[in-house]
Image 1: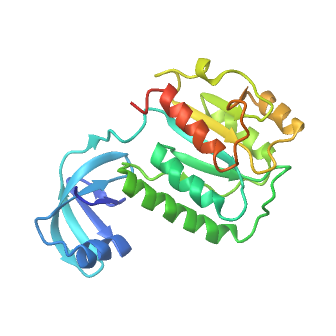
Image 2 (image 1 turned 45 degrees about the horizontal axis):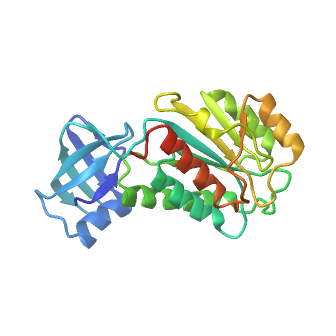
Length: 242
């Protein structure tokens, strides 16, 4: 299988890699002129890139016409996840990218155990983890990990950007199966909590912001399990796990 790289330098039948990706292709993979790779640009399409030139810190390509990727879901899904402790967010990022998430937005809420600390540096690492997971999963776009939102009110304000928002609450709610079908939504928000869950006031805030309160069955799920279960169910019900 050809190696996969993401680049913003792509257009007019040409493309280029710079930085660590160029070093990896030229020196680790020992690419030569005429070798081919899969290139993915900001448009979410896949291109076959043929190496045209190799220079220090830069590899240039000629590229084929872009084609849609079968790995990209038809629904753009943003996962709002309560900020967990002890590195669990890295696990959520890695696996949710594999499952097809478009964006991950951590947030702090009333019952969060974790507290903000060096979030700029953490966000750089989180996006590197997302990029590596996207390459391994054969994605054609780079899912984004946003800087954390300071409180649950900020989450609620962001929900107006979505066709549908689902608030996963330990208190239960509407059956998920009746809320999603193939083609029923283009922009979907999924909201799951931290180790401490949500307080009743936050549940009321979510409903007031237009989110539909749903449950994930009678079992208690860990904070790193719930977002992956919610995302998997959403992908299945919208026809993106077939």
